[in-house]
Amino acid sequence: MQYAFKTDVGQARPHNEDNGGVFVRDNMVLAIVADGMGGHQAGDVASCMTKTILEEKWQQTEEITIPTVAEDWIIDKVHIVNDQLFQHSQENKECQGMGTTVVAAICTNQFITIAHIGDSRGYLLNNNGFVQITEDHSLVNELVRKGQITDEEAENHPRKNVLLRALGTEQQITVDVKTIDWDPGNYLLLCSDGLSNKLIDEEINDILLSEKSIDEKVNEFITIANERGGEDNITVAVVHYTSADEEARCMK
Image (cartoon, rainbow, N blue to C red; front, side, top):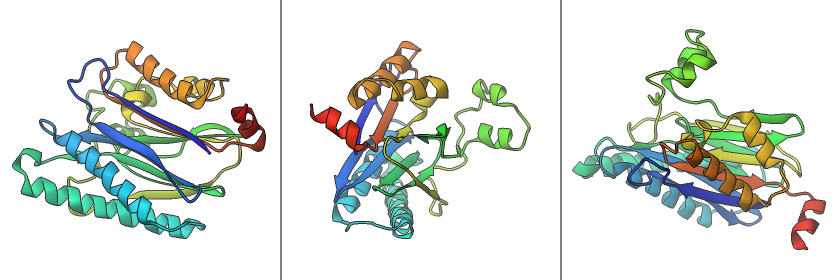
């Protein structure tokens, strides 16, 4: 597997409240994107704690070979993160009300297990095309789902940033988890809304399929989002399940 991660403050925000990374253990990859929220720099704290805790737990785990184990692992660890975030916000006045989105994926040679809370997204590119594999936990997405507004109206809705679920804001959370098979040649992309609000699916698909290196692709995502305003922090993680031919080309 090849992978790349980048986060950027964007063009308008004074600091970066996004965090995440891609971490490897025993031929497995854990990819994380977290988009923090809260007063002052509490969003920074929430997203950084999320990345740090998940990374620490990941480095302590043994090889995961079946989806049920992956799903149990990621649900358990996200709940641990939530407990620690909520406790930290209660004990530190400057962090009261802090929270974060999270989208995290365990990638093995057989499957992807992805978990998320909030509106940071996961996408999969395979032989059937490019598709979003997470469902935004947002007010506008709920309105779209109920048929009260259209997708087009959702794009410019005044309450577009209102989340129905976040990590760290409440003691009890519900984590959406699913496992998907994938094959050599497929791509997994995780991102904050600083990217998904700026590029349409077709553009992301075309960049992933380009001949550029995986690092160049991630850099292009960030560049385009910034060129189109960069009003938010921008974070993207890409994992490419490389085929034997692709591995050979990369070795040249």
